[in-house]
Length: 406
Image (tube, rainbow, N blue to C red; front, side, top):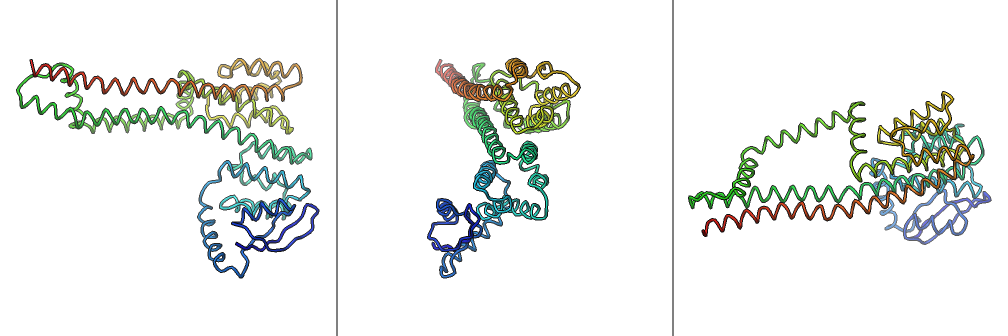
């Protein structure tokens, strides 16, 4: 496909020409290899088939504006901005180029940022209206970097932190998916056997006039309950789910649930390790970008979802604000002792940033180990659970057969 492009070199010279490529992303890649940053790309007028495809792409771009911005898109945005700043481009030139690379909602955001900056706002001021998308951490780091003149490394640190946070979140989701699927399958197998297999045995014994053994009577009672009073279970399920949602929506209820989750073996360790990883990487990243300790802890406290740990971090920031040293402020019940000791060492030695970075790497490895442990424990537990249910049904079945033959 033939494209027409307009672009700028790193020295600021304008370029115009035509290029053959599979799509617009391929055009951008080819031009970047030549040292050209595209400001406008469009299908050549003599390619009618390409024009129709371009029209479909425009429709698809409009659909994409309703889809939330992905973490990978935000990481790409910050990395590309850093790359273009390194090449000597201004903020508006970089945003103009990115507006032709990005698609969907992020393209709208980039265009809005470009308009605000062109009207006289700084990069951080323009980002304020999109704080809910990029997060307070990115906003404060960019604001601090603008004052220090180190915007490029700050953008790279933001991208790195987002990638690490996304990786940890992905690990948590993948770790919990298998046990949940196994539990649902177990419930499904149990209900299927109670609703289809056991009623046939009940009918058989009723026709024969014999009394089933106690094990079969138990299963028949469960099956009868499920077939005749299933609505009771439905009501109980709705009440439990609704009650849990309501409890979690209150401040005290959410704190109670979060504390309970921390006490569950393996699951609690995973949640705690994830939070400690965010604390360590967040502190090293924010402090390196020039954000104050108190503000850094406030931002990290907002990032952590577990309210018990988050409350400890916020309390630590308030304690430091009152004049306490950082090591003492971190002595809280839900902040792991390792973090408390490393903060104390980092404060005394003046090497807080590298120590927090090392702690972050330690907790990343710990999360991977816990993930393996959960996976290793889930498989035999699933086999025992499903096998126990099926085995008990078979035991009741064969005992019934022996009683019939006797």
